Length: 123
Image (cartoon, rainbow, N blue to C red; front, side, top):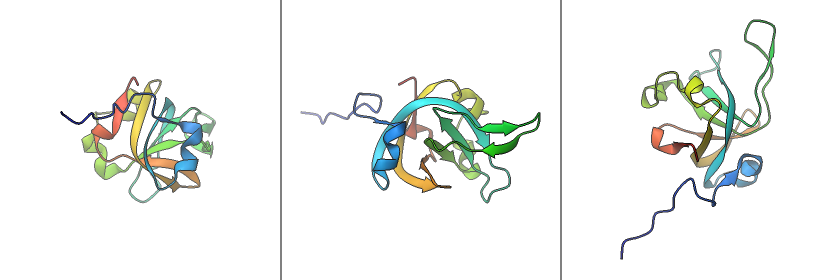
């Protein structure tokens, strides 16, 4: 018989609020993308997909007052070509499941996504 491959959108996912307790583990984390932000002033210029809470911004500009402590997906600029154009805006407001090893980036739990098959939309 063929092996059964688990569906990354099934009930065996980790909630975004529980991601920090899975550091170093490969898991699927699911939740709603509320906001995104490109860190142009950081090495490798990552884009963060922010789950469950948005960035606190100041004024009409994009000055950041505070990033939320919630789970994020990090996509390094060098990997942008592997994702749809304007993926930050495309994914905002959607429920996503991200699969990968949970790491710490800027004191918050993240999964670094380098390929589209790590992200499932509408889970």
